[in-house]
Amino acid sequence: MKFIIQRDYLVQSVQDVMKAVSSRTTIPILTGIKITAAIDGVTLTGSDSDISIESFIPKEEDGNEIVEIKQTGAIVLQARFFSEIIRKLPTDFVEIEVLGSLQTVIRSGKSEFNLLGLDAEEYPRLPQIEENNKFYIATDLLKAMIRQTHFAVSTSETRPILTGVNWRIENGELTCIATDSHRLALRNAKIEAENNETYNIVIPGKSLSELSKIIDDSNGQIEIVITENQILFKAKHLLFFSRLLEGNYPDTSRLIPADSKTNLILNTKEFLQAIDRASLLAREGRNNVVKLAANEDGIIEISSNSPEIGKVVEEIQSQMIEGEELKISFSAKYMMDALKALEGTEIKISFTGAMRPFVIRPLHDETILQLILPVRTF
Image 1: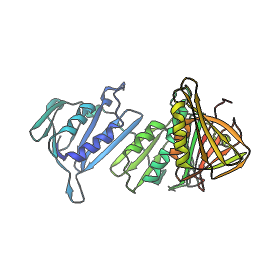
Image 2: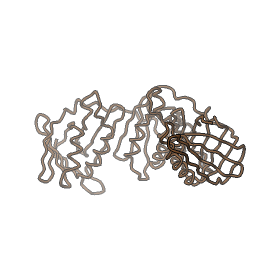
Image 3: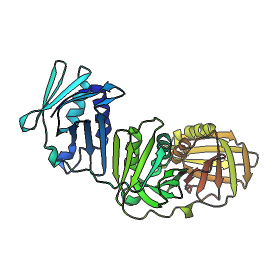
Image 4: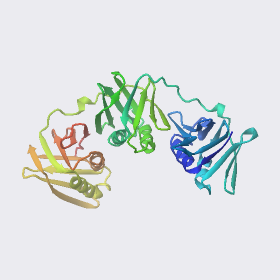
């Protein structure tokens, strides 16, 4: 194998596939990146058996020659060293050549590295996915849906299913739900589907987080293919495979209250900043709890008390308040996470009592909601 490639393209591809490479794998070859040179370009592959990423660098694009293939072939190189070397090479072009017995030479300018490679034949094959059932979603919408839900997945392995985001597809609509049993994030959107199949799958939160980092913000579309135990995201020159979590996701529709006893409309930014300040003292306590009291005159009092440090009281004016007076306590972190995920300058919070879950939505937007369980302090 021998080719010369523009360094910038190689650096970008290496960064993308590195997101799937783990140093803590039981399969030694997976600590490497597989590099395949074919007539039409170079393909890089990284995998940790949960996530696999394949990045393709075409021979040329828009009349610009990116790769000159001198000899086709494949090799696996130690990912950590290879990525560091590529980043620090001195010139804009890199030559990679595999000599006998898997010795690989990387040249750039007056730099020359010799790395011992591994046999590419031993690298696990990527899943072969039959592309019968596919649908399409705009890249920026997919990134928004991930951002607005994946933070609410559980980090505890006691219920592995909750470490994923539940995707439900029905009647051309995708609903994403994440919960760690103390809070819930939900977002839905219309998608383009090739058939009317319904799906109910759970994608690991980690997979979605990594996917979001590497898909380009360009306005292109992502093609998504679902099989029994895998999901494939196809972007331009990029394939991203993730395994699906096994098991049934709990029915969360029962958690979302249908009615409410107290409703508030607040300015999102003002409320977020008030919670942020109140949490400064709450963080010192074990539980990071702030209290909210809503009075009939529309004043919302936000307070926090840490016995060893002191207390803080904030007042903000609500834009509307209806229903019963209310005192409730909740995690400042959960509230700030929820507010950052919502779009829009105003939010509506609907309470059904001091110990019942409450719902936060942007005003005039039914496609997204955040739900938080209160904390008993009163």
